[in-house]
Length: 187
Image (tube, rainbow, N blue to C red; front, top):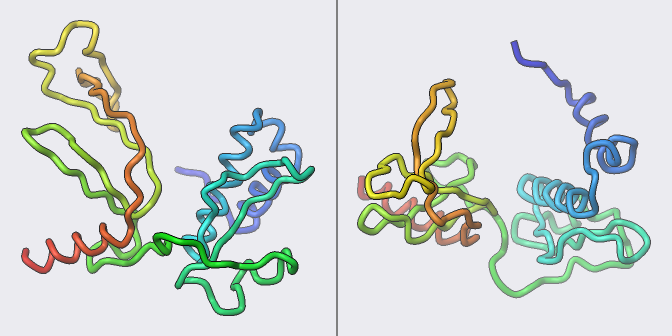
């Protein structure tokens, strides 16, 4: 049976990772801490509104900070961000709103659109920042050094070739929502 973590337990873990001893035990580098804080801010934005600055969390001002910009998902009073940094401003930024639009089918789940041509991944766009890795189960034509074994979710071992694609998707939430709705309306 899996561990059952309460909301209080989760709050204690996250607090410990941000400002307690867990930070030094689990997030053992500046880069890992910055990534955690940035990812956590994105998670709050995804559920409560706002958009994380393009600049990751950093401690160049003698404390760890992350910038938050408004989007159309944010309440007018600033939502969860409103009572903090009263001197700062939730100023608009150019570009995508950062709101994850809900499509008819995804019910808020992260969605990726994978563009294939000739069976080869050409491009990936998603409505949530994500990294992707492409493994090819068709190992014919790959050299011995390019083929490896990976353990599947059920414990079995599969032979695959790792393609040269370990990249981040293009973050295009509005386009992903539009194309998913368009495709599903024709299905």
